[in-house]
Image (cartoon, rainbow, N blue to C red; front, side, top):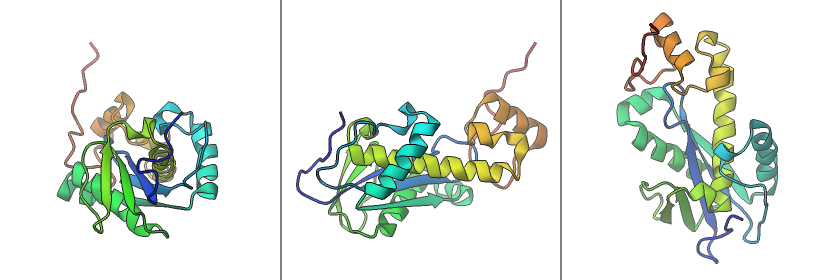
Length: 198
């Protein structure tokens, strides 16, 4: 069972990102403030859940949360400031959009930059430890997957409907065949790790 609170008393926002390792598309982040006594045994790291369960939990989170918001940073900005800074900026974007100001921020991972002088704590694998971070991971993942499926209709050759921009063989083969498009992160190694089939 995931923990409900880190401080036990402050209004906490859990924050997580999605799409950091992708070759294409924005990096998304979400921030979620859950009620202090909130419990949901189904909440877990988004990567441990099926797509169907993520979608169902997304609706529950949006209904039950005291506040939630999603932010994103474009591939162009990722190329300018690097993916780490862009991931943190996406988290800041989500936090700024919250209708309720948090008193404490729980961040998945080990890197963050302070925002609005709000205290924060980085938690490695936090999406497997705290409900608010798990909820944020689900929102970030589902909103990003939805976006990648949408832009995948514009560029069906990359199969983003299925790979969501991650560096699988089919995606890399398509980059070799068709070249990158406007949604690719040009600062990433788009052509790396392809082996010829002999």
